[in-house]
Amino acid sequence: MEIAVVTGGAGFVGSHLVDRLVAEGWRVWVLDNCSTGSWQNLAHHSSEEVVRLPWDVSEPWPLEQLPSRADVVFHLASPASPVHYRRLAVETLMVNSMGTKHALDASLAWGARFVITSTSEAYGDPQITPQPESYWGHVNPVGPRSCYDESKRFAEALTAEYVRSRKLDARILRLFNCYGPRMQHEDGRVVPNFVWQALHGQPLTIYGDGQQTRSFCYVSDEVEAIWRAAVVDGLAGEVINVGNPEERTIRQFAEAVAAVAGVPLTVEWRPLPPDDPTNRCPDISKARTLLQWEPKVSLTEGLKETFKYFQRDV
Image (cartoon, rainbow, N blue to C red; front, side, top):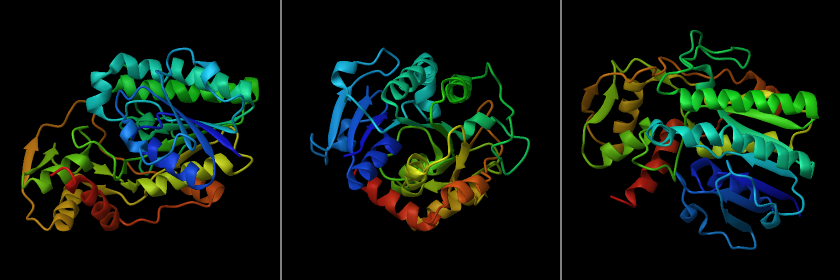
């Protein structure tokens, strides 16, 4: 039986990845301190399928509680929304630095493949669109978002060095705006904000003039790419964008949310936060070529599933 270790496996994307691994017949160890995730996201799995280990992966790992071998280490641990990474700024820096080092060292000791989920924030406020992996980015190293984007850039650099100097079979995935069930309505990202506001008959909050762009990829599509990155051979050292290449303005996205909710669009306008990116759109040519992957779930279909999830708490 294949064995996976997943850091951040109780979180939004991490728990969906655990679901996929279990469905593929893998046994999974999850390390998570639940600073932003919840063990409830894994409650439907037995302890035989998923071993839950409450742990801050920034601290040295409790090897005596981990398997004696692993086939793949998936490193997803990190706050990912502005609300959480500002609340946990130093912790975010540590999980993406020391946490990444501990995960890399464990992979090396086990002879395991290593898959790290980085972020489109590595590009900062990009000056080109769409963003290819060869673009180095336009990032403020000391701004209010730097605890996240710079620590992710460091995590990428550390991973790349383990590939070069220690011959680790590691792959770096830059995830673009992912959404779907198990997001937290209070985490500050645009999808849960809009969906929650629409469900409660509130105006949708748009920052700036609403012309900034994003691309939205449903969680099952992103997990499919993560899975393929783990099982496809010959990808050591590759950096691969994972996201939906359909770019739309925040205003257009608000219109789509209102349409799915069946409510008239009303908007509350607020000032644009500092360093908020003006555009986000992945070039997924590498994912298409190396992973034979592209997103399949339409925005309307994905939003309907997301609304179903949030309606449980209304």
